[in-house]
Image (cartoon, rainbow, N blue to C red; front, side, top):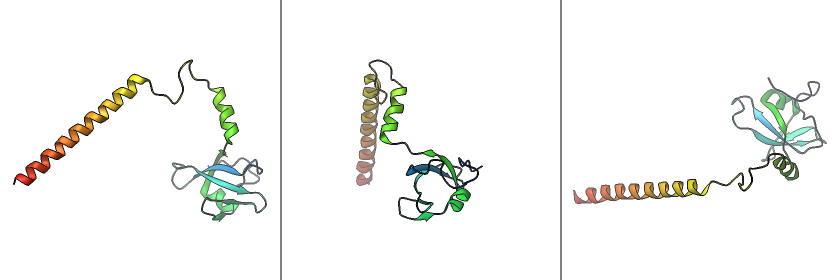
Length: 125
């Protein structure tokens, strides 16, 4: 299933005035979506490296996921999902951050001592 928005125009986005859209490759099962630019004047897709892709080829190789949002649209959608009072969405609670840092430090110390023991043992032979 290619899931293009308009069956009459496979390989073309629904909103041709919008410059960027998310597409997923069919050959990898859509594991790595890619943003591609749509050039309405030339009726072709453009990748970040400048290569062009005709709509027919895009319909064979990609599945349409949707338009790429502008920063203003992202900000507006973020306002719809309000975080809990006094807790920012991207923040990790202090106790979890402290635990993570201490575990990383302890792991680094153990790894350093392990390697130092191997070097000392190797030089002693």
